[in-house]
Amino acid sequence: EMEKLKKNGRKVVGTYCLFAPYEVIAASGALPVSLCGMKEEPIAPAEKHLPRNLCPLIKSSYGYAITGTCPFFFYSDLVVGETTCDGKKKMFEYLGNITPVHVMRLPDSNNREEDYANWRKEIRYLKERIEKELDLEITDENLRDAIKEKNEERRVVKKFYELSKF
Image 1 (cartoon, rainbow, N blue to C red):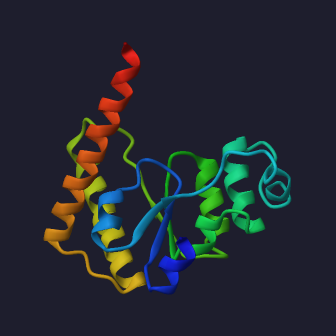
Image 2 (spheres, one colour):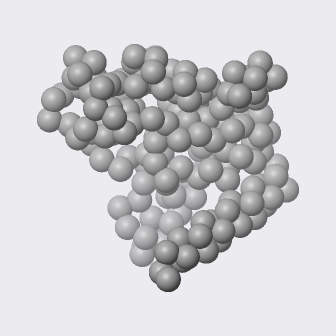
């Protein structure tokens, strides 16, 4: 299916973390996808580049990318990362040598006005990068629609998880 989408000109944006603003990606018309990073097999190839003391998630994610075993990474036109830890920052630096990577700086807290302002800037930077890098436009209307759709998805998932309470 991914190959069909790409052949029809659809852009793909890979992400590694839930902090990525999927709404911005979706509003561009690109397909946001979560990238691989859950198995042990890709760790050994990653350790040839990354320090061995990094967490298995980072090494697995990087290993998938460099071995070509994550199809979503292969088809990604842009990878969005976040500064959740120093290890991921290093991984994104290395990934930047093989594919376009946009790293978003996460705020240190959520209770200061400047942190909120900085996060808004980071979202704007991502919007600009997607528009420039992928030659797509993000309109206010498309953004509103993507936000509504993602909020509905979150509502449905929350309702689904609440079923396990019984």
